[in-house]
Length: 435
Image (tube, rainbow, N blue to C red; front, side, top):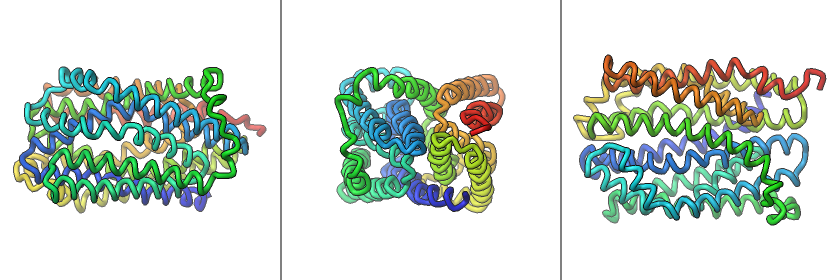
């Protein structure tokens, strides 16, 4: 079982390592374009896309769970149907997002408080990057489907290509060609379309034999889409709740000025840095849970869950040790602004706490997704979002901006506790003990 877990997790980890590196390179480029407002502009611009794209996260999550269970049943006709439904939904959503872009950004800045310089840079970034929407959302669908089919090599190849190109093109456009914030956005657009082209090539290479199952017209009928929409409706609410937490963290920190917004942006990147390693095991959990539920193999499912948590705890412990050794030096890599570096010092202890309290929640996410336990995921995320905002507003008057970090920690604790309590019913309970 450990070999199966590592075979699935290792490619995802290798791909995921490039994700925060690119995000940090974007921040590092912005941090050298000018003052703290440049970092804030990237932070707010990125948050605007999080508001759009995280709500569409079900395209990866739901597709992966359904595809994994179809794989466990050896029902390849159904797995192809799921892919067609996911990509069709992705393209329709992308067109809708592009149609409402001006209304959306106007509404967003009527709510988000930031300085005029930050808003100007965020708008500049947004109106270029929005053109990547069809590629970005389609890639969600392809990644989920590949993982569900027990293939983490294809998403690894695609992700590494996208992230390396994003890094190189952002440097080229923003620094070498002097395009600034616009260059960072343009690099992202070009990389996303290169990734989509790569995913299509990999689909053809590995799954050409399944193409005869493709029936676009039949797959997209409302009757056929019913289960897809029910599952993904719950996952949409889950994504919205999660997004409220992360966008809330950024927008609430903006109230404290550009300097602390820059600090909070960097700290969030660092707090999530280790999660890209855990996500590799979460993807393995998604694939294996769905596979064993589809095959109605309860002993293998229980063995997989134990193995997944073993590796998750190892990653969390090693990550905490790494943060102890390299917390402040990483801050200095991301910005040369002495005020931002100095202001980050009071927040560094959170880097030692977050991995230990979040690894359980992140691992259960992958397992629940494989079990397509969408209603439970939805309810847990709603509860954790309430815990986040309640904790912040109750404690802000006492500890100031530190209340944001306490609130973030509290939402992770709520997720971990509730998902552990519900696991017997929502995961292992999906297979009768006599199977």
